Image 1 (tube, rainbow, N blue to C red):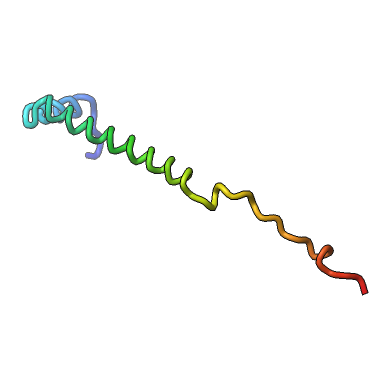
Image 2 (image 1 turned 180 degrees about the vertical axis):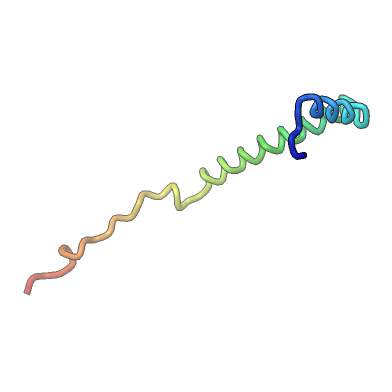
Length: 70
């Protein structure tokens, strides 16, 4: 029941074209593409703006160096 074959897919696309028209479907596709592009750009920009990722890693002092022999 959950299998969608090529004939059913073509029928669904044909009905969508009749209901919305090719122009409207193209606008929706363009909007989705721009949204994905902006989302990815935002993720890249967040990584560049994060100051914690830009600082060099802190070096920790070893225990041997902090204790003086008795």
